[in-house]
Image (cartoon, rainbow over all chains, first blue to last red; front, side, top):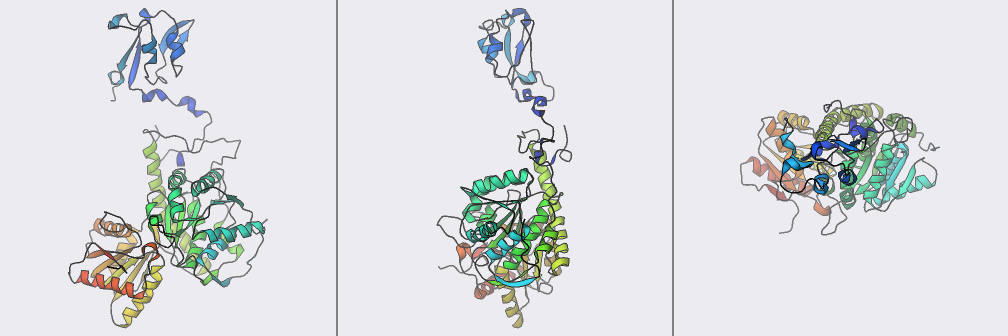
Length: 104
Length: 401
């Protein structure tokens, strides 16, 4: 990232549409971990995700967009395959973000 | 098209408000947004007349509050206009939030302020608590001693604010009623001279430039907010140089030199008072009187409060024969050691390793008189401090007990 001497004066943004490159997933404190083998592709997570961060290809859930997912946990809460205590059976598990980030 | 009204230099009997309005007319800003508040109202009365009579090209906006006045100026300045407003006391307090927006967005808005006490109790008269309350909002702050200084400072402020090394709002304070409503001799420049001095604003990232769309005032989270604050500190440090340059150039034009501070008979002074605003004039007169009696007294008038001229103040104190210093604040810092100016002077001295007996004096709150006798009293306090006598951290002048 740019240092204070190189940032635009007064925080002016000179590049139109730059919000598309803003990785809002940086804010996340909890990370949904997706276990493909348990997913039934019911698409409930895709419907509920407020940040359109469930990536679907050919009618199948394939991954989570961590660049934009803010870790709200709605996907894991609503997922019919993620109830109970047995983690190995779940499709979506919320885990603390620090487990995945070296810099923290 | 603005009309050329003043084709030769004149000395006129003007109040501070008239002088400010005259400066605004000659600057001919693109946008002025204002809301009336005593004692600033008159500035906008005069200016509205100029607008109505076609003497300026200004888009004059009458808004519903000071918060809106500065907000409108912010929008206009972001669009690339030369924007101004003016206010006083509680009006500046209501602008407080937007002052930080203007400085954070680095918009060169010029804001003449007629210094008025803050409520409560409600009071329309002079003190500096309005500007002192806004001192950390990132605006450059100048204080004028009289109507002519206000006129000169407002003209210089345009140059200072718009300099590309600075790009910050400038607040120019003059004491309510004492300057704003008292008629004095004011020497005016011609319209052409002012027009040439303020020049044309160089636009950067105008909102109206549709070929190069920009976003002004976006969010900056924890990952970059601090970088932008650091930029503002740099701009303030640059302003120290730019204010001096503008003052030198103005001196070439008008023959009157403006520096960060003005010294009066400090060279051999043993007792020094430091003061801002109209009281400096009274204090100079008092210094003359005391000097006639053989007392070695002197005065430092601070013109630039932000950026504070640390080096200038200490250099002058150091070059004198000072035994004790009194710092006169026209504002309170309740619960602080003494007033805001006192704190700045102490910090300046301490960080240079210079320790002198120093005492705080609070005067003139809510327009309380500060005449020759009171300045003499202030010097008495400084003398007691120099003699090692017990002096409280803050002495109130002209207070009933």
